[in-house]
Image 1: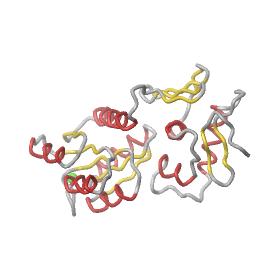
Image 2: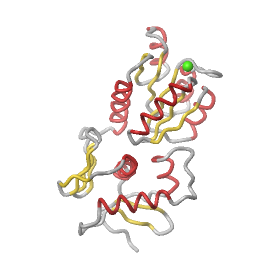
Image 3: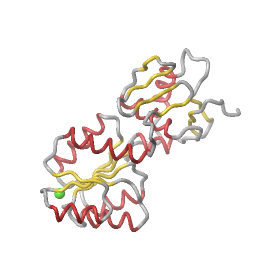
Image 4: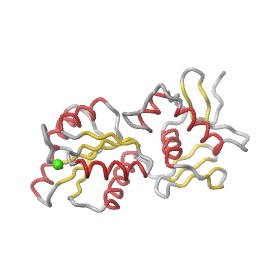
Length: 227
Ligand code: CA
């Protein structure tokens, strides 16, 4: 999943970014409300973590502008103190949830998981295609009921593909969703990860699920695309 963290306290931003990356998310950061608001409007994030007290433009105004511009990305607000007024202003501006600082990282992760789950909008959390299954709660992957061990990046890539089956996913799209804004689209990093994933997911199976779309990108599908 791709997450934007808007937080001016460098130490806190770094802590959140590092922790979310370890969970396999692609994380961009912005240190003020103007930059954060801009990134939230030009990129397609799955979640925005938004501090309220920010330089240039506060989090409540950022959130309200996002909603006014039709951006429905879930927003998790961070408030410095447990002030009812702040929370109400945040929720009124269109935030989906809030967390009071200081917080335990485990709690942040639980909120993030809940919001992403709501976003994925499915009653059954299991993502599957043919005999390949991914459980976002336990972060486990199985094919034909045999567990597959993936690195966090391979897992993130497969999750993205499973959320977008039967669609051609260009390297640019994959880069935007699975890596972060520092990703170099000229590099062959995506091809390398796809080949690792293919070795783990498709090798030894008669039906290949990960297809190369020549000159276009990749597609996850039960049916082999026309050559
Ligand atoms: Ca702040």
